Image (cartoon, rainbow, N blue to C red; front, side):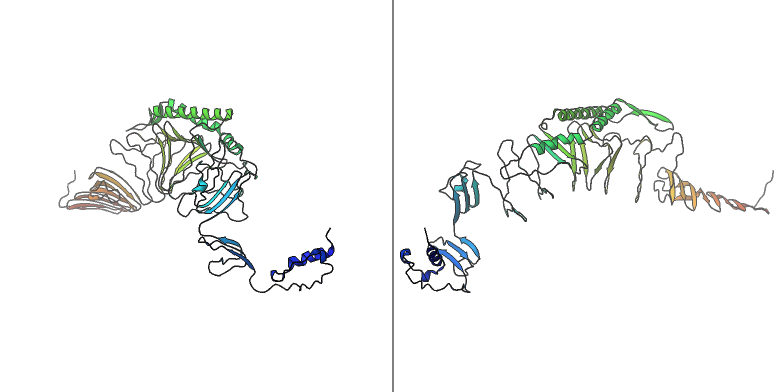
Length: 496
């Protein structure tokens, strides 16, 4: 057993600088005079240990203070550098290799491509038969300055996940961002979902995805979807509706627009709703080829130039309360047979700039049970019929036309017109009957009604009426009637 003196001797030997190290026989340590000088305070110069190998690869390992010398490492800490290659290799299970620089051609380890990538990969490579866990307290970034970045799992039924436990998850692509699946795609926002807390030795389970899918149709109002489709089917079966007659007043009937195509589309929507409900009850995975976008509160799809929803048999945008389609530049709903925007309560089509509703080769019908309003805050309203008739009709009430500055009714290019302004009304021959703002009512073939006078003129005949005076002029003669007198000015007067 070592004595206290031996312990003191060993301690002093360890603390003695190399320049004063001596060999001592522990058997004589008690009798030997210990003349070891005391340990001095650390010097003020740099403290480091540097390994330099005289080889073309110029390998250097530096421990301690930075060394600014030639072919040294001017960084403090435990540092190393070499021209070509560095790797660390644990050979026991789980076998792991970290490789830096050129490929490690002599090494072999399994990889996902079964190509022994460690022998060809240049740059940085981490290959392990175990798990990889990288964890940071602060920001964690992966950037490729010129090439691709891939995150991939090759395990059957395994999950490649991007998760932000308490923040936002963003996916952005300047040229394109693609989310695709050979089976189905589910996009959802559900407040009751929580992030998965995956430990080092745990794996991602499928519960998160299945929970999301199971809630897609449980939070969607299935009754509203089926009800909307059923109402559409009923309306499609009803072939006629009460509307105004063409060319006359009173109620009339006409076939509904697109009744047959709409019937097929609504039947398809109803069948699709039934299948969705059955999938929910069955509780299986999403049907192959299915894409579901769902949010517990709201869903928004935005296209900077165009947003398209296309259905080969039917395309329906429905809501139990309100449905809106908004396009900053363009918003499209497309269907080969029928495209419909439907809601059990309300439907809106809104655009910040322009909205166009057109039937290029067919009929356009806008109708309402209670009220229909067409309004423009800044600009004109134009209602035009290229042929036959354009009519404004009220079957059981009043029909009104009003303009704050004026109103005009005319016929033909140079026919007759009625021009009403805030100061007067003109009725007569219009030289520019098709120019609504300035129809050029002919002064010699018109009647003008003002606040204080009425003037009727036809060529050389004119009647002018004022509150206390009336004048009738024909050719060179005239009659002036006032409360006090009747004045006749004519070459000849005939009474009979």
